[in-house]
Length: 100
Image (cartoon, rainbow, N blue to C red; front, side, top):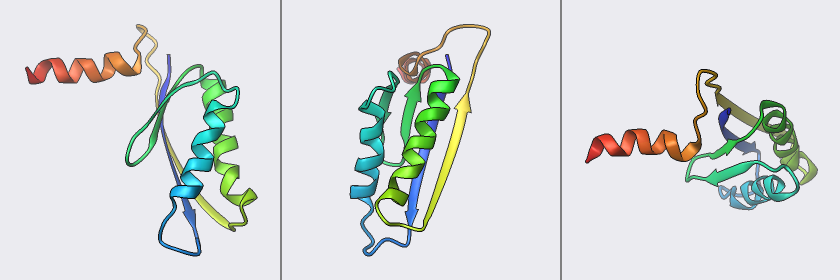
């Protein structure tokens, strides 16, 4: 199942803080996308079918425009492994088990 990292950067905000824009973008994931998601300090990680992920990215990308901004930079990294099912937790566990 694909796992994607999404980073949305609103450009031209009235102040250096962008948390209100990120909050609004993140809320769209809870609005019927059905995607498993995890907020990190620098991005959002999502897991689900590719069409749902890309649809969610499109919705998230539009949010700052709806809030009056004229520029948004969105970066997407997709890990789509097809030889076996891998979840977000399994990916993290594969690394952390080597730490112990």
